[in-house]
Amino acid sequence: SRPDGSAMVYAASTTDNPGEVYWYEDGQSTAITDLNSGFSDSVSLVTPEHFTVPFDGGHVDVWVYLPDGEDPVPTLLNIHGGPAAQYGWGFFDEFQVYTEAGYGVVACNPRGSSGAGRDHLRGVVGTWQSDDPPDVIDVTAALDGALERFPRLDRDRIGIMGGSYGGFMTARMTARDERFRSAVAERGVYSWTSFTGSSDIGQWFPNGYLETSLIEDAEAVWKASPLAEATRINTPTLIIHSENDYRTPIEQGEQLFGVLMANGVTTEFLRFPGEGHEMSRGGSPKHRRERFEAILESHGRHL
Image (cartoon, rainbow, N blue to C red; front, side):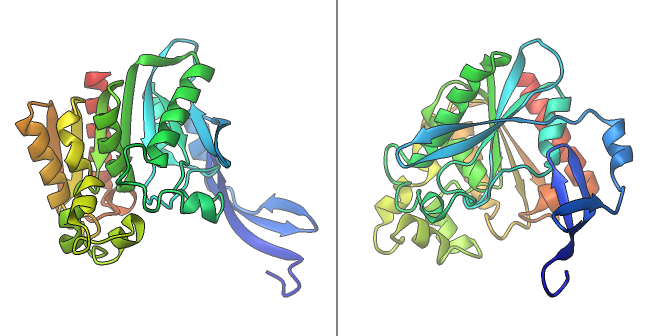
């Protein structure tokens, strides 16, 4: 950029373009690369619809991706990681893959997400032990709002999925809401109790969000864990975890798998050797393709 800020070069993507490099000057942006037009022209890319749902003191942003056509489509509720990540107006290959496969995708930024101010970001701190955490309320409201606004979304064929915090939420939502006919839980936290001793951030991350620790209040730490209510899960669930995940170690997925198996829930466990927490984004191309294939096969079987 120029020292006076009057011009700069930047990279940007949109929901239906993986990205280009742009020159900005005098209030105008001009693309200086054409890296992805061939790709964009060769596939069907979807631009989402956006709406908001209110809560006391704020609102939740929601996006809905729908494939071409007029027929009803199965619904996939996606929950991002973090929880301080966010969905937005950039390109996200996963949603395009799912819409191309014939699904309607619902995504939102519940309380706990970044991008909407400090209060929104910290809106889940100290709440995961409660019976009605605000993020569960927000995600439920986002799904309900999408189903009301977009009649093509099939209310009888709803799946849910997410990774990391999204995996944590997938397990919590399926324990609390019987609408889901299919679930994919990836690299999630399912027991804060064991996470404290096994994760590379286990000594501080749960303390910050739970506002207590395993030593101070083991009962509260356990109550905030999806495993504490996993016996209520009846949704067929695919659990995906990487063997070299140090952020949410694979023992987390193994514990959830064991509980679901013991309760007779239809469940599968897909392990990726040699991969870490970022496998879905930075893993080997072979494993990333296999992951997509497994997700689509699992949802396709149950939806």
